[in-house]
Image 1 (cartoon, one colour):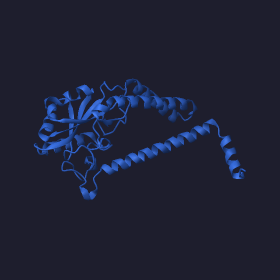
Image 2: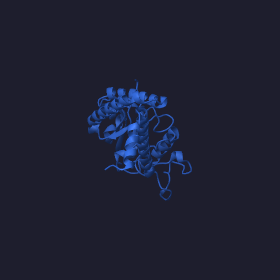
Image 3: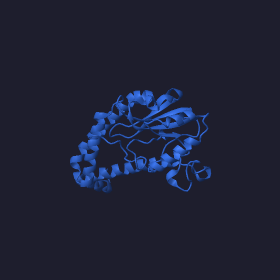
Image 4: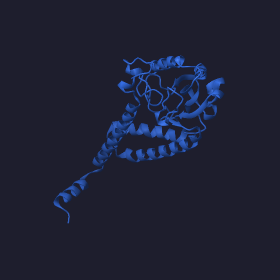
Length: 264
């Protein structure tokens, strides 16, 4: 037998109109996004050096958080100023022992195909091992992948974009908040471009993770198409989710914009 309390709850739920239900859905989505952002901040925090562990490398000023170097992985943290970071990491590369192997993330000045990524390293390409490629499709977020995983990545990106676009298109007519509606329309346009343009054989590579002698990495840094050689502390290759690189469009702060711009 239903309790009066349960009956009241059922009646209240039945009284909810489409607009109210939409607001509840949007609040739930907002809460989920907040949880994801919090998880991302935790992951970022875990990569930053602890105070007792040396808060920054020798190339960075410990009093300047903009130049902090993570204790785990390689690459800039979200929000770090790009130009100071490039200057600090370039200085660090010039100081390393030329005879020792190091891991490094090589960021390119533009996007290239996977087939052309090794050529973008210049004449020294044969003296390093390419361990991973860092990619981003138009309208998509960056990801570090094994070179053999690009085709699977493209298929997954296409499927995910199609699913998210369809869901937003279903929700859009029920949204009465103009700001939410504008965000939905922008995301629909971006996801449609991502679904259309993601191509494992296209210009999607903007960085590679390599291992080689430091003197070779220093030569690679002099190539015209190379924007930064971000050298690690040793030769061990970090986990791919602990690798970040500078996309060509990141000119002010790392990680901004969140998505690679699309022509759509």
